[in-house]
Length: 154
Image (cartoon, rainbow, N blue to C red; front, top):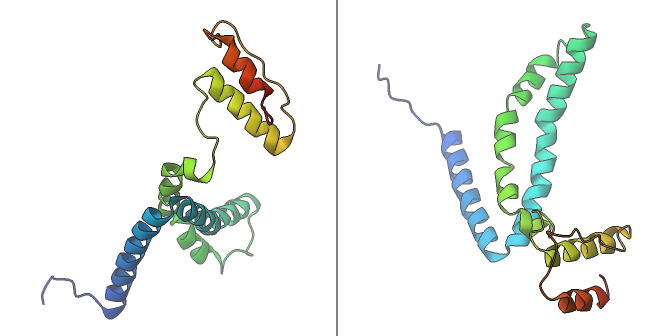
C-alpha cells in the first residue's frame, strides 16, 4: 500500500473554490478597495459569531453543568476550534482600516487634531471646540489656524 495521499473530488473542488476566491478578492480589492474592505468586514463579523457563540455556550455549560449540553458539545467544540482561523481572517480589515474608517491613527499635527475634532463633531455633535495644548500645538503662523477654525464644520 502506498503512503501517498489521494485527493478526492470534494477536496479538488474546495481547492478550486479557494483559488477562485483568492483571485476574486484580489480583483475586488484592486477595483474598489473601500467597498472590498467594507464587505470583508461585514462577512468577518458575521462568521466570527460562529466560534464566539460556540465558546460562549461551552463556557456557560462549564460554569453551570448539567446534561443539557451533551448532544451539542461535540459540534460546538468543533466550531470553537475555528477561532484561530476566524481571528486571522480579520487581518485584511486591519490592513484596509483607513479605507473603511476615515479616523484611525493618532493625529500628528495641530491641523489633523482640528480635522479630527471637526469629524467627531459632524458625526456626534458633541465636540464644538478644540483645546490647543501649548507648547506642542504651537504653530509658527497663527493666521492659517484662525482661518481653518472659521470654516464651516470646524
